[in-house]
Amino acid sequence: MAKVEVILIENVVGLGGESDQVKVAAGYARNFLLPKRLAIPLSGANKRRLEALRQRRAEREAHEFNAMSELAKSLSKLTAVISVKTGDDGKMFGSVTAGSIADQLRTQFEIALEKKKIHLPEAIRTLGDHDVELRLHPEVRVNLKVKVQSSNPPPAVEASPKGDQEGGDRPRTEKRGPRRSDAPRKTEPKAEKAK
Image (cartoon, rainbow, N blue to C red; front, side, top):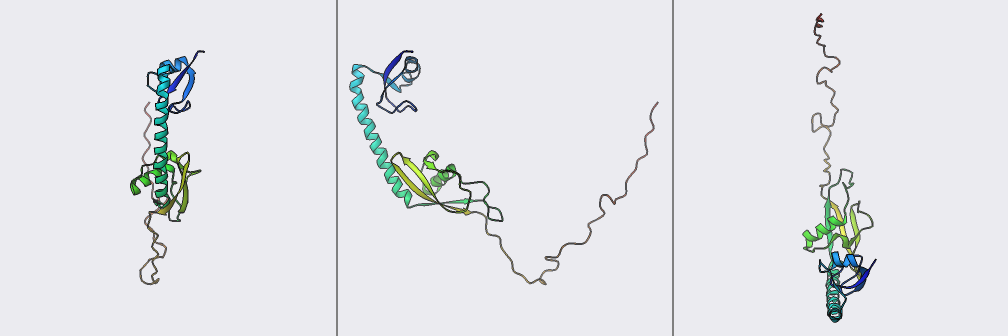
Protein backbone atom coordinates (compact mmCIF):
# COMPACT_ATOMS: atom_id res chain seq x y z
CA MET A 1 0.00 0.00 0.00
CA ALA A 2 1.41 3.39 -0.98
CA LYS A 3 2.21 5.87 1.77
CA VAL A 4 2.42 9.62 1.46
CA GLU A 5 3.69 12.30 3.81
CA VAL A 6 1.38 15.12 4.81
CA ILE A 7 1.50 18.04 7.21
CA LEU A 8 -1.49 18.22 9.56
CA ILE A 9 -3.18 21.62 9.73
CA GLU A 10 -5.50 20.65 12.61
CA ASN A 11 -5.49 18.04 15.36
CA VAL A 12 -6.63 14.63 14.11
CA VAL A 13 -7.52 12.12 16.81
CA GLY A 14 -5.29 9.06 16.64
CA LEU A 15 -2.98 10.60 14.06
CA GLY A 16 -1.34 13.72 15.45
CA GLY A 17 -1.57 17.39 16.30
CA GLU A 18 -1.32 20.56 14.30
CA SER A 19 1.99 20.98 12.41
CA ASP A 20 2.91 17.29 12.74
CA GLN A 21 4.44 15.63 9.69
CA VAL A 22 2.97 12.12 9.34
CA LYS A 23 2.94 9.23 6.87
CA VAL A 24 -0.50 7.96 5.95
CA ALA A 25 -2.05 5.74 3.29
CA ALA A 26 -2.46 7.52 -0.02
CA GLY A 27 -6.20 6.86 -0.13
CA TYR A 28 -6.73 8.20 3.40
CA ALA A 29 -4.90 11.40 2.49
CA ARG A 30 -6.61 11.77 -0.92
CA ASN A 31 -10.16 10.91 0.23
CA PHE A 32 -10.33 12.25 3.78
CA LEU A 33 -7.51 14.51 5.02
CA LEU A 34 -7.03 16.72 1.97
CA PRO A 35 -10.72 17.32 1.02
CA LYS A 36 -11.62 18.20 4.64
CA ARG A 37 -8.60 20.54 4.82
CA LEU A 38 -7.14 18.71 7.80
CA ALA A 39 -3.75 18.32 6.07
CA ILE A 40 -1.65 19.60 3.20
CA PRO A 41 0.74 17.55 1.04
CA LEU A 42 4.43 17.71 1.91
CA SER A 43 6.20 19.94 -0.62
CA GLY A 44 8.92 22.58 -0.62
CA ALA A 45 6.48 25.47 -0.29
CA ASN A 46 4.50 23.72 2.41
CA LYS A 47 7.68 22.95 4.40
CA ARG A 48 8.20 26.72 4.73
CA ARG A 49 4.62 27.02 5.93
CA LEU A 50 5.35 24.35 8.55
CA GLU A 51 7.28 26.80 10.75
CA ALA A 52 4.32 29.21 10.85
CA LEU A 53 2.02 26.32 11.82
CA ARG A 54 4.36 25.26 14.64
CA GLN A 55 4.52 28.80 15.98
CA ARG A 56 0.72 29.14 15.88
CA ARG A 57 0.37 25.80 17.71
CA ALA A 58 2.85 26.85 20.42
CA GLU A 59 1.00 30.14 20.98
CA ARG A 60 -2.38 28.39 21.19
CA GLU A 61 -1.08 25.77 23.64
CA ALA A 62 0.51 28.45 25.84
CA HIS A 63 -2.76 30.41 25.84
CA GLU A 64 -4.77 27.26 26.75
CA PHE A 65 -2.34 26.44 29.56
CA ASN A 66 -2.57 29.96 31.02
CA ALA A 67 -6.38 30.00 30.77
CA MET A 68 -6.71 26.59 32.43
CA SER A 69 -4.25 27.56 35.19
CA GLU A 70 -6.36 30.63 36.01
CA LEU A 71 -9.53 28.55 35.95
CA ALA A 72 -7.91 25.99 38.26
CA LYS A 73 -7.07 28.70 40.80
CA SER A 74 -10.66 29.93 40.88
CA LEU A 75 -12.17 26.41 40.96
CA SER A 76 -10.02 25.35 43.91
CA LYS A 77 -11.76 28.00 46.05
CA LEU A 78 -15.32 27.03 45.04
CA THR A 79 -17.72 24.49 46.50
CA ALA A 80 -20.42 23.16 44.18
CA VAL A 81 -23.65 22.33 46.01
CA ILE A 82 -25.80 19.63 44.41
CA SER A 83 -29.29 18.88 45.72
CA VAL A 84 -30.62 15.38 45.18
CA LYS A 85 -33.82 13.59 46.07
CA THR A 86 -33.60 11.17 48.97
CA GLY A 87 -35.91 8.71 50.64
CA ASP A 88 -37.16 8.85 54.21
CA ASP A 89 -34.10 6.91 55.36
CA GLY A 90 -31.70 9.47 53.81
CA LYS A 91 -30.55 7.30 50.88
CA MET A 92 -30.18 8.95 47.49
CA PHE A 93 -32.30 8.15 44.48
CA GLY A 94 -29.79 7.67 41.67
CA SER A 95 -26.29 9.15 41.78
CA VAL A 96 -24.25 12.26 41.00
CA THR A 97 -22.31 11.89 37.73
CA ALA A 98 -19.78 14.00 35.86
CA GLY A 99 -22.59 15.37 33.69
CA SER A 100 -24.60 16.57 36.69
CA ILE A 101 -21.49 18.24 38.17
CA ALA A 102 -20.83 20.00 34.83
CA ASP A 103 -24.47 21.18 34.70
CA GLN A 104 -24.25 22.47 38.27
CA LEU A 105 -21.02 24.39 37.52
CA ARG A 106 -22.77 25.97 34.53
CA THR A 107 -25.88 27.03 36.47
CA GLN A 108 -24.26 27.92 39.80
CA PHE A 109 -21.02 29.63 38.70
CA GLU A 110 -21.50 30.13 34.92
CA ILE A 111 -18.43 27.97 34.18
CA ALA A 112 -18.75 25.88 31.03
CA LEU A 113 -16.69 22.73 31.51
CA GLU A 114 -16.83 19.56 29.43
CA LYS A 115 -17.89 16.53 31.44
CA LYS A 116 -14.94 14.52 30.10
CA LYS A 117 -12.63 16.83 32.08
CA ILE A 118 -14.34 15.80 35.34
CA HIS A 119 -12.67 12.63 36.59
CA LEU A 120 -14.92 10.42 38.72
CA PRO A 121 -13.72 6.84 39.26
CA GLU A 122 -17.34 6.00 40.07
CA ALA A 123 -20.52 8.00 40.50
CA ILE A 124 -21.18 9.63 43.89
CA ARG A 125 -23.92 7.75 45.76
CA THR A 126 -23.72 9.26 49.26
CA LEU A 127 -24.62 12.59 50.81
CA GLY A 128 -21.88 14.84 52.20
CA ASP A 129 -18.66 16.48 51.03
CA HIS A 130 -16.59 14.96 48.23
CA ASP A 131 -13.39 15.95 46.41
CA VAL A 132 -13.60 15.58 42.63
CA GLU A 133 -10.53 15.78 40.40
CA LEU A 134 -10.76 18.04 37.36
CA ARG A 135 -8.30 17.41 34.54
CA LEU A 136 -8.43 20.73 32.75
CA HIS A 137 -5.23 20.30 30.71
CA PRO A 138 -2.60 17.54 30.50
CA GLU A 139 -0.48 19.59 32.93
CA VAL A 140 -3.27 21.22 35.01
CA ARG A 141 -5.27 19.27 37.58
CA VAL A 142 -7.32 20.63 40.46
CA ASN A 143 -9.68 19.26 43.12
CA LEU A 144 -13.19 20.68 43.30
CA LYS A 145 -15.21 20.41 46.49
CA VAL A 146 -18.69 19.02 45.84
CA LYS A 147 -21.33 19.05 48.57
CA VAL A 148 -24.21 16.65 47.98
CA GLN A 149 -27.27 17.46 50.05
CA SER A 150 -30.87 16.31 50.22
CA SER A 151 -33.51 18.44 48.52
CA ASN A 152 -36.26 16.84 50.62
CA PRO A 153 -37.10 18.57 53.90
CA PRO A 154 -36.26 16.47 56.95
CA PRO A 155 -39.27 14.53 58.28
CA ALA A 156 -41.11 16.56 60.92
CA VAL A 157 -41.53 14.73 64.22
CA GLU A 158 -44.53 15.96 66.15
CA ALA A 159 -44.48 15.34 69.90
CA SER A 160 -48.08 15.38 71.11
CA PRO A 161 -49.70 13.83 74.17
CA LYS A 162 -51.64 10.64 73.44
CA GLY A 163 -55.00 12.00 74.57
CA ASP A 164 -55.03 15.07 72.29
CA GLN A 165 -56.41 13.46 69.17
CA GLU A 166 -59.26 11.06 69.17
CA GLY A 167 -58.19 7.91 67.41
CA GLY A 168 -54.81 9.44 66.52
CA ASP A 169 -52.44 6.48 66.70
CA ARG A 170 -54.94 3.74 67.43
CA PRO A 171 -55.37 1.04 64.83
CA ARG A 172 -58.68 0.91 63.00
CA THR A 173 -60.84 -2.00 64.02
CA GLU A 174 -64.23 -1.28 62.45
CA LYS A 175 -65.26 -3.16 59.36
CA ARG A 176 -65.84 -1.32 56.15
CA GLY A 177 -68.34 -3.72 54.75
CA PRO A 178 -68.73 -7.36 53.86
CA ARG A 179 -65.81 -9.11 52.28
CA ARG A 180 -66.14 -10.32 48.76
CA SER A 181 -66.15 -13.92 49.84
CA ASP A 182 -68.99 -13.19 52.33
CA ALA A 183 -71.15 -11.39 49.79
CA PRO A 184 -74.10 -13.36 48.46
CA ARG A 185 -73.56 -14.80 45.04
CA LYS A 186 -75.84 -14.09 42.18
CA THR A 187 -76.72 -17.14 40.22
CA GLU A 188 -78.11 -17.02 36.74
CA PRO A 189 -80.22 -19.78 35.29
CA LYS A 190 -78.34 -21.99 32.87
CA ALA A 191 -79.28 -21.50 29.28
CA GLU A 192 -80.65 -24.56 27.58
CA LYS A 193 -78.66 -25.99 24.75
CA ALA A 194 -80.12 -25.49 21.34
CA LYS A 195 -80.51 -28.73 19.40
